Amino acid sequence: MTRTSNLDHAFLAKTGFLLGLGLFAFGVGGELLGHSVFQNLPAWEYTLFSYSEVAGLVIGFFSPWVFGVALPLLE
Image 1 (cartoon, rainbow, N blue to C red):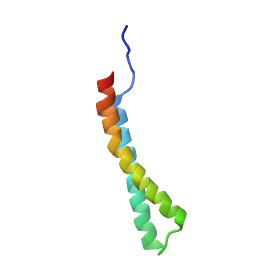
Image 2 (cartoon, rainbow, N blue to C red):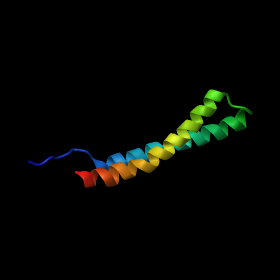
Image 3 (cartoon, one colour):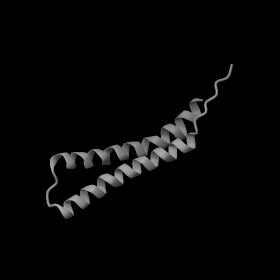
Image 4 (spheres, rainbow, N blue to C red):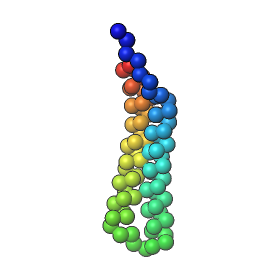
């Protein structure tokens, strides 16, 4: 009995990396633009941009490893 999966690992790895890159760019760009236009950002905006930077780094780093390396080896 064989198990087959219809996941496109390459697409998921690339999309996850680009999503992480986009989140990181949103966080950095928002923080830089916010500090240049407005001198002080409200606390919720600072938190939003900081969390999006961290989430972007985590998603961008682990997505290729999970979908590009680990899942194809486990199938």
